[in-house]
Every structure is written in C-alpha cells, then in structure tokens.
Length: 124
Image 1 (cartoon, rainbow, N blue to C red):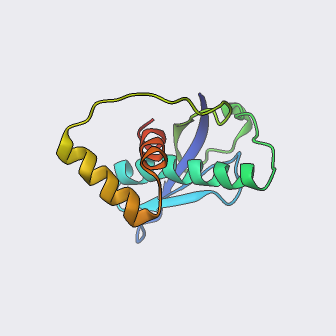
Image 2 (cartoon, rainbow, N blue to C red):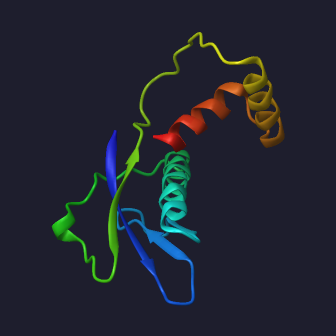
Image 3 (cartoon, rainbow, N blue to C red):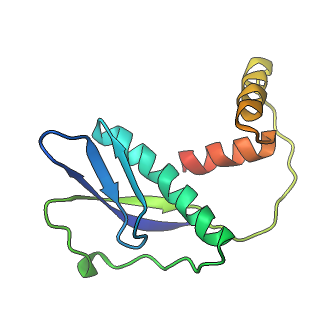
C-alpha cells in the first residue's frame, strides 16, 4: 500500500476541496473535513482504476518537500496495491448484512465480490 499526498483547501463560501499533486485532475469535495478526506480515497481509487484501464503508469508518491502546500491542509491517502491476482476466499456475514450487500451490488450492477472489494478499498 502506498500513501499519496492530498491537499485540502477551503474558500470562505465553498465546500472543502481536495486535490492530488501526483494525479492532476483527481479531485473531490465535501461539506466537512472528514467528508472530503473520506471522499478523497474513493476519488483516488476510481482515478487510478481509470488510469490502469487506459494503460497509464501509476506514479510513485511525491516527497512532501517537492510540493507547494501553501494554504492547504496536507493529508495522506492510502492506495491499495493494484497488482495481483484475485484470490477466492470464504467469509461469514450476518444474513441481513449479506442481503443488503447483494441488493446494493445489484443496484450498482456489480457482483458481490466487486462490491465488497470496492468497499474494502474505500475503507482502507
């Protein structure tokens, strides 16, 4: 797992915004600092998945001293490694939770495995 620098900024009359110096165009926003940081992980994951689909190389994280952090709160956002093969596993979930997972996955047009993998990435 690698950690990427995210810069959080807020103008007086706007929501919080976050950007990634290593990933131009990858941004997220939220009404609270907690919300924007949570959304940053999801945005980074989706951005990187798109880069992989397009055959683009994923950059190594930049050093903090190489980035202009003026008027920004700096946070690190983890990115799960994208390499590796899928591994089959057996897990146990409460019946109601499993039903909710399956319903949410279905609404999103995903498999149960894809839904749980996305949820794990977001939580990491």
